Length: 172
Image (cartoon, rainbow, N blue to C red; front, side, top):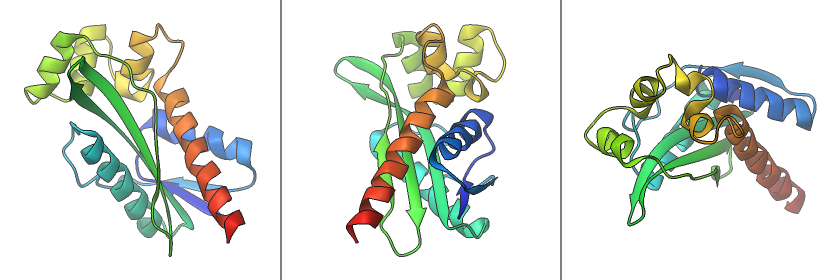
């Protein structure tokens, strides 16, 4: 069975690879596809839509059996700004399966910069004084002292997606 992810981001690609290693025998590819949403999603709905679009486009572009889309975003609540992360799994003839990941608060100054129009990945590079944070530990890795990385968070989402998929197949 061929699985394709709709990104070239190493943190997301490696998350799916590790998930598939745990699940069994799959072939894997990645494709640079559009999320169809803003470069910086700013709601759960927009982040979910980006994940779904990536899953659908990856499956179609790579002629895969399963498409995976992983999307990171940010939300604003009465309690402040939070990271949000969503994933989607696409299979021909089924509604997309979705799952969400961890949420942690962001410092107010980071939230304000992102809300003003900057991408979180650029803000985080400056904040952490590092390059390509989004391809490595991610904001979640910075703000958890490396205990949870972006790859690990997205791997968990991937396992949630496949778990739901296997459950739905078993129910048919």
